[in-house]
Length: 471
Image 1 (cartoon, rainbow, N blue to C red):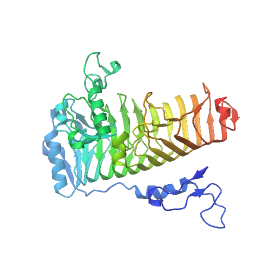
Image 2 (cartoon, one colour):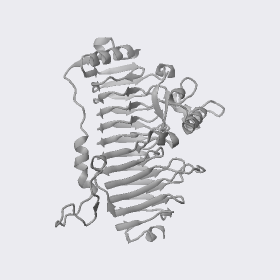
Image 3 (tube, rainbow, N blue to C red):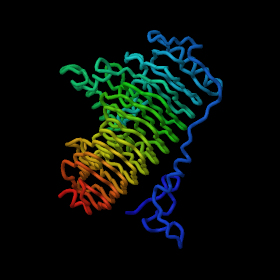
Image 4 (tube, one colour):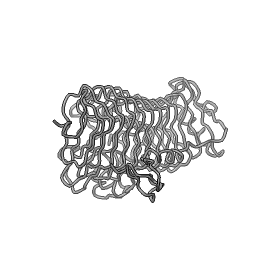
């Protein structure tokens, strides 16, 4: 396997090959993991002036009944005008509409403090510039939102509660299991209209959605921001994706617990971002725990910004679809993704790459190590270029340079599922020092290139090549 060194900051560096040295005359083996400290050195949480603005001083009441939106907005405004600092949420339950951050503001939700967000959709209007499933538009404001801000954070040991349920946001998905009834309206018509606008290149200013369209907002979304941190919080009952940085640089998501099993309730979705650290988080989600994205179809190609340098460390995936998914909104591509030292209880996939002939996108340099997993309902490693059956198009998705080492899975349906399409690329995939027990079915490999196995054990037997997986 050929290892590519660097990431964007080292794009001009010479790639290193296994068994080769970056220094002449040395026998040292260079791997991508050796470049990880350089990536992490750039991911530094912002600091804030030691100035504190308690929302209670601006009239907020933590009685679980009084609307504190105006008080919270006033505290944020005062903090920003003072040059920055902390907007403190003290113990109590504070009802609020959407919260919009300013530069240099740390919204600090303290221990035993909860922000409960209104379930009245009208509170999230007027529409803001946002992205919905990979396509730019104007739509309901996220619960916590920032646009083109620098040095922003949401921190503390408190809780952000979106209050989503089958009685409100979740039923908009259009599934009976989430409270929708046949014949009732859902998000489907608006989602199709937005997709069509993106495909036809309709100007974003004309893609305006809101009342009656039922496109659910994210819980936290930072759009086109720099120096971003979400730290320590519990995030519950999100209307849609829970934590969604878009076009952001220098992002830290640390020690966050996401508890949200609704539809499309992904835990953390960095999209078109550079230098992202997701560390020490716990995910119990109704969709993917972490999903790396970069825009959908033509709109993603129009923006043309990949997600680069994502580091996922020491996270616990309790429940979800994919522990780490790349796609399906991946038209801008992704590269240099590192997953290290994570534990998994029950998910569908450990690593899943999703695309098709409409999405396209190049995904490369994906490195996974030291994963301990209990139950995998589908496959430990999946590349699905046939995602969303029936999708046709002229785009060519690419996946290459994927290295998985020291993965232990105690129970899984399959070890590997690689579903390519003619003309696309799934190549240079390696599993090394991995153990899989209680595997129900043989692996599936279609339209894939080089796959290498080294010290792979399946149900106690050494498997030396892919033929041994597919039997």
